[in-house]
Image 1 (cartoon, rainbow, N blue to C red):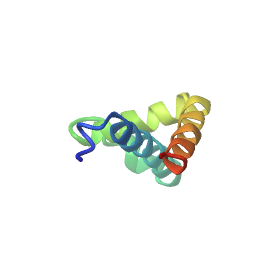
Image 2 (cartoon, rainbow, N blue to C red):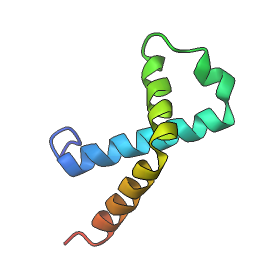
Image 3 (cartoon, helix red, strand yellow):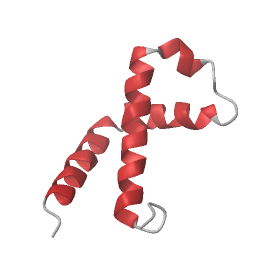
Image 4 (cartoon, rainbow, N blue to C red):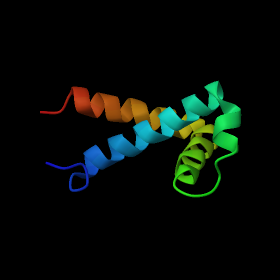
Length: 72
């Protein structure tokens, strides 16, 4: 089933995108900051969300990990 039609898969993809963008912005801050227009602006916005709401994103990743591990 596609990630677009399964809510849990879509949520997993979004959480991973946010976490990955925030991590990459920590490694390469100048690369992310100069691309604030166009399609790459989406990655900058995801990085900003990951930085600002970090505890909630972390809890969301943990809950998602346990739900995937113990899915029946």
